[in-house]
Image (tube, rainbow, N blue to C red; front, side, top):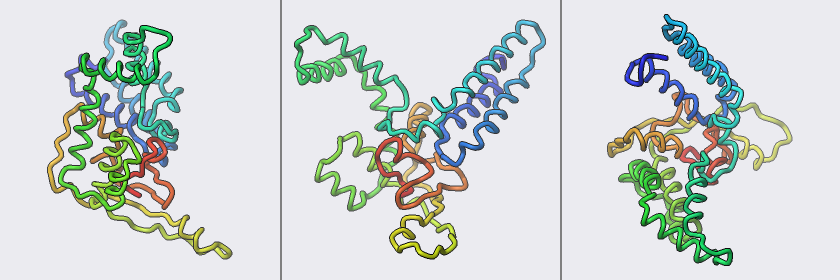
Length: 260
């Protein structure tokens, strides 16, 4: 509706869309409709001088309104409340199903044999592109950072998968880029010291940039947002307690976030 994908207006609309889609902070759920209204109004401002353009614009707005009704299924501020271990779409499961169909040649195939065949299939078909993009984002975030003691302990004990460890390392490597400030809370009579400690809230904000330059490509930047990496924090910071963070990364992946 803006005259092509190269127009500044189209790029601005896409940027607005991605900012809405990738926002993970649970505190922004109440502002979703306001954010989405801004996007819809921007799209409605597109020039429509012919009947065909008016029909196209109406269809675009109707499509956006349909997405608004389904916000709990795609907007990260809602979906990250669900534990998915970092799988944010059906893309990976669909790829696995497609690969499985090509290697299953018997109803009596052992699971161990199926896994081996899938591994060979992935190597032969070069379908590791998404994994490489993910690891690029993780490596860029963790570049030059020393692992915290508990991270080294997890590495030695091998209690999580290599991919999960990459997620944990990338989160831990960003810790020294943040500062926290406690949110004042009124004293409540009758609460135990343990309860008081658990209920303490902090605002965690970025205070410095990484010592090594992080140059995300356009592709890895979108992945970085999914992985809670550099540049994905709101200016006002995150609201964090000992057990929870408003970024919802831990809820979604099962891995502690950098803010905690």
